[in-house]
Each structure stands twice: as C-alpha cells, then as structure tokens.
Image (cartoon, rainbow, N blue to C red):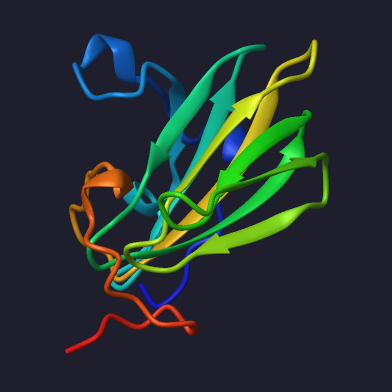
Length: 142
C-alpha cells in the first residue's frame, strides 16, 4: 500500500526495559506499522525524571517534537553543550555527530515524537569520544 493511516493508540506500546534495549523507556514504533523506508518514527514516553542520555549518531539526523511534558535538553558538541528548557510545541534537531539528550523535568508524563533519517540502526555513541575536527557548520574536516 502506498499510504497508511493509523491512530497512535492502535500502535503497540513496547517497554524497552523488557527487551534489553537502552534506555528503559516505553515507545510506540510508528515506523513498524507505517510503510516507512527512509525514516524511523517513534513516540517516546517519559515518566518524571526519565531521560535519553547525551549521545550522538554517526549517520542519522534526528528531529524531535514535544507533544506533552516539560524537558531539559542537552545539545551541542562535547565541551560546548548548552541546556535548554522546553515544553509542548518545542521542536529541535541533531545532525550526525552532534550530541543531544533530554530529560523529563516535569511532574507529569512527557511524550516526544522522534523522527530519524536515514532509517539505519544507529544506537548512538558518547559525543565526548569524538575528535573535535568539526568546523562551524558542523561538517567534519577531511
């Protein structure tokens, strides 16, 4: 089928703590029920205090959108990280090799839509391990 319409409540909830995949959060893998080929699409559910720790990806760009909750973001290259407080309607992105992470700092459940491309298995790495060979536009020096 060229298109698919689903309601997120109809997408199974996965508790990542039961499948030994960090972080120990709950997700709805929209990309498993929609006919995506080039993007990963997930809804991430955060209880107060839960987080996706500061990390980076080798190939994947990620776009995030807060649907519910209050979050503290940690964004930027190692040694140049910035913290930003956001709520519903906030959107941010991280390019490959740029560190990012976020924590639910509110008192209620938080929900974040995450879209990553290309659709690769890219579990992430510690941005502190990167050589700082990037220039101002984020490109890696050759």
